[in-house]
Image (cartoon, rainbow, N blue to C red; front, side, top):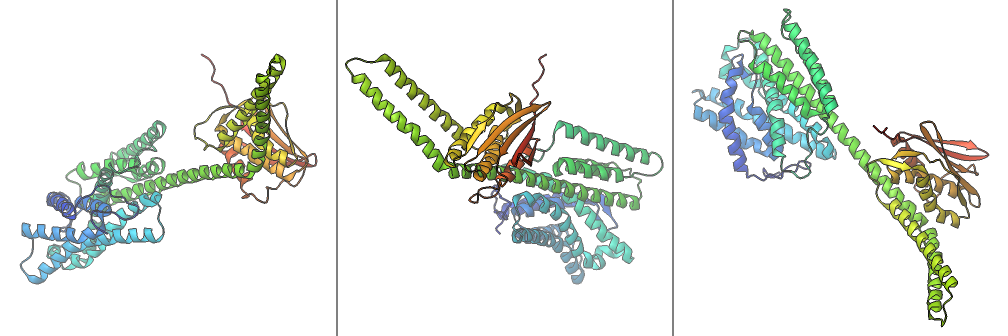
Amino acid sequence: MSANSSAPGDPAHVRLKPTVIVTIYAAAFLVLHPLAAAWGQLSIYSIWYPIAGVRFALLWRFGPKLSAPFAAADLLAHLVWGDFPARPLQAATFAASIVLPPLAYGLAIATLKALRRRAGGKPSEDAVALAVGMAFAPALASISSLPWAFFDGRALAVTTLLEQLGAVLVFLVGDVLGVLLIAPPLLWLFGLRDPGREDPFQRVSPAKLAEACAVVALAALAAWISQNNGLGLRLEPMLLATAWVGLRLGAATAWIVIAGVSAYVLFLLPANTEQSVRIALHMLTASLAVEGYVVGSFSDAHERHLQEIARKDRLLMHAERLKTLRAMSVAIIHELAQPLSVLAIEAKTLREISRAPTIDQQELKAVAHLIERKSANLADLARRLRGFGERGVAERAPIDLQALLQDAVAIVRPEAKAANVTVRLRDSSEARIEGAAVELQQAVVNLLRNAVAAAPGEEVMVASRRNGSVATIQIDNPVRNSAESPNGMGIGLIIAKTIVEAHGGQLQQTEAHGGVRYSIRLPIHCEPHAQ
């Protein structure tokens, strides 16, 4: 993978040369690495290491192969600063402790992306992989530091094994906080110019935002009460609040809470806070950050999966409508051919009448009226078929129930006529329902086609009635065996049920009068009261 391209699933539309990327990283390292000394603990590592976030963001975006140049840049910076010990063995150990963490970051990112490719990862899973990487890369880097924590010249002040392991733990906490606080906004900025970029705050609504603010405020109040009652600062309530925000509003909003808590712990803790307490608070903050961001990322992925399922459901419904039209095509062509033949004959008659020496006005009017009526019938059938073949839209609107049933019966009638089935529409209720007209029409058409296929030579009855706030559509088939046509895909009834339930209704199949009755129950559309 080249540095100016990205891994599959990570389209890099910002094209930068590797030398430019390494230069940017080196400049950031020269600024941020010395800055981390303000959070130095246990004589070796810093409890917050912001350059780790820059390193992770650049490697994730532009490719893990840049980890080797990044390691070289780190090494060169320390050479310029004159940090290397004089003794060769200690210098080699020190160099290894500088080089291994960037390489570990590259290895972690490369491993995650390879696993995603092997598993056929989808774009909707990118957020989860990113969240896992933000915890996995610092963990692998801290493991890489284990040997050097014991032999590095800087570790001479650390005398016990537990303190040496504690130094590695500080390394992990510092890198986790650095990655989770710095990498997300950088990656968002990198993606600003990407076509089709998703808004990271698209799930935030006023109601959910108010809920999140209330939860965070309650958690902050609990932490404040604890701190002012001699129990010390307790971040456990904020940990729960961050998980709640991530679950409800996604990773981007959870990051804002993480950043607020981390800012307090990093910059506002009293100067006389004991080292052990400070480390414990940073560990809890790192746990909070990992938990909140991972939960938010899983929630985002779940939301994208639901959207993808809904999109595929719409495509499947559209395919079923087109399949229905194809299956009905022979009958529809026959239905169109007959009136077209009549129109041709009547047009010829009209021409003959116009050529006669004397024109019979009554005959002329009768022929013109017949042509007008047949043309209107053809136009009406074409309108219904065209509307049925179009893709349904997500917007819902009030629908006249009687008009909906008339259109559905008109669409099915040619196929029913070919099967010698009479589809009779009784006087229907004048109720209005709310929904996507094309989708509801498809549900009724699917059920009618099932009834027609199961009842050759019989009569299928369609009716509707209103009972309070519910409208019921009934399709009565006199034949008990109402299975779908053997030539169908076997999903017509399933799609009808899905559509009805998506509109807040119910579809039931029962036995009635020796046959089968489909009953669709839908809520009535409530008109707003005039002020």
